[in-house]
Image (cartoon, rainbow, N blue to C red; front, side):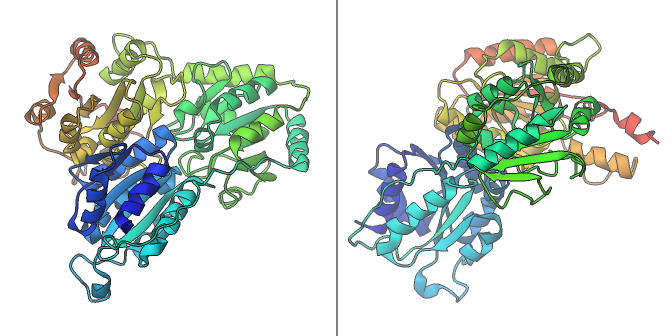
Length: 543
């Protein structure tokens, strides 16, 4: 078969049913091979960045590698934002990039970029395949690398002259994801350290989701009565209304929630890289706190904090074998205190004087099914979601720990393809939404019914907030012009609604839930209310 057909065969063997792209002439043979493969749907996006975000959101939801295609240097650099997001978020992805003819390499051919070198710093592996016979071997290796260990993106560069070559192809088995378990000595060490605790705490990250360990984490926490916090934008790895839930470690986390980390004497970091945001600029954990760090990736252990015990293990079997042990639990009151701090810091109820953003989160909490899935962009608007929404079920949140703008809508499209029966809602600011708004037409064209909420305050709100903090009243580059997102939605065949009040939003949201179409609800918001806790005026006069 041709090299192009071999690529499609590898994708099919992985059980992947949706791939994302912007078409390009450099990989036309692959597109032609996909034409004949009815088990794989090709989603052609409007921009490579949007296609990459769709693949990343799809991968986060299915826990299978997201697959995205783009052409040469121009398409490749456009989708690099999605590659970086997948790298920081530990999301499995295989990126196929068309490349110039082999005989033109090194001559600065049309749109030529040294793709494997370009992407090496933000990919787990990058390879250019020049031998057609090795196509199955190297593509299957790409999938294995993407999904094993700490998952992440892999780049495969495809010279256009290699793709149509027909030769004998040999395929290996689909790689299973290894599930290493802690050794007997490591299990004993975990139990011994935990037994010394008076105020232990779990910080749970994306490794829980990647390892399908959500139920195991609940059982583990209940067995040892351990309070559980979730790492930045990993809201759905532990049910937020569970009596052992202690909060979310993100941007602007309430001081009461942070105090629980500071008061802990033993911290179990489970499947988290203890990122800058999660650890509040690497300041949250002190040397006198015992740190037990369990992660699938040995390079993650000690990268930020040197653990007292570092264990390389897959989260599900690790939690299952440790919870078979027994210890005397003496910290039930501490666990209750941690949960109560979270409850006080994130009260869902609203009053007449509350800002519309909080009221909208209350509506989402009330009206959405428990298994609905939410995505969001980067931006201050997300603070209300992170603070007040309670995620009750697994696989109900997809967000960029990389902080990528423009993520919400395309990620929602990818997530909806992964879970066609779920209600999927994206939340974006006007700045981020405008970066990938063209993918609304993609949703319309493929009949992908997502609901997009756009909080429109005519500015880059997060940057404006930092401007006001450091250079009060010296506003440069953060004001944005008027855009009617409702009319823009209507122009591409979606439903568009503009609202200014909570009553208007409630009616619009009820309509959106009843429709099976892409819907944009534009919420006109006040620039003054810049964040969950502060107005612009308050920031300007803060000493």
